[in-house]
Image 1: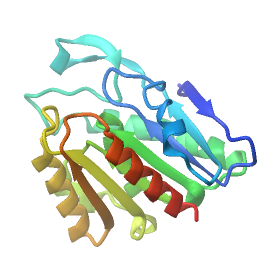
Image 2: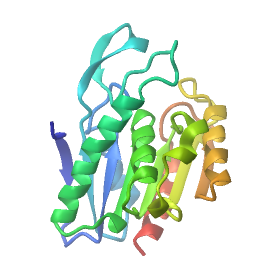
Image 3: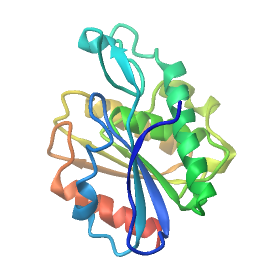
Length: 216
């Protein structure tokens, strides 16, 4: 089933696109307001998909928008759903390609759960993306990452940002993910902030700078 999306189009022909995935329990509107705050000089199309509704174990089985289930008793479970969600996002990539924006002009972005899917797709795809933006997130099953990455992704720029006080995804998990990527020779720009599981103003400025550089 195709993902429903919120789309923001620039006034002039886009130089590229950002496909931005929300976190657990949110929806595509979650990061819509940040576009105006970025103050970008380059015209970009922003695509914010809504995750499917599914029961989530960590939240007592309640149904909510989620890219995959999270079961604290089985932290390495969920790969099938992650791959299915990545395949749905890949359909959005193809839609942009058909509209004249090829993958090398597309940034895959994601917060928390969304970042897991963005990293999975961006590192495993046969297409080389303009970049991967991974916010308050981690690499799922990082010990087997080398088995999943594609040759096309070897030089993709990666922006990782995390809160030192994050109670949902401890920063140590993100640091381990970063170190795994660096060990595989990925270009990772790392930023950490005195915040919890959200996005702060300083991070927004860093995101804007990094995005601007991807489409310079």
